[in-house]
Length: 82
Image (tube, rainbow, N blue to C red; front, side):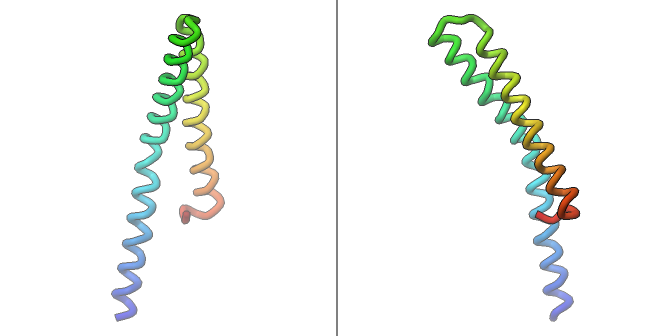
C-alpha cells in the first residue's frame, strides 16, 4: 500500500506542475489584453489617440514577462517544486 500512495503522490505533484506551466501563456495573454483594454478606454476618455493604448500595451508586455521571470526564478530556486 505505501508504494501505491507514493505513486499517487507523484501523480498529484506532476498534475500541479502541468497546471502551473500551462498557465504561463494565459498569464501573458491576459496581462497584455488587460493593458490594451485599459489604454484603449483611457484613450477614449481623454481623446488622446493611440498613445495610451501603446503605453499600456508595453506595460502589459512587461507584466507578462515579469510573471514569466518570476516563475523561472521559482523553478530555479526550488528545483521545479512550487
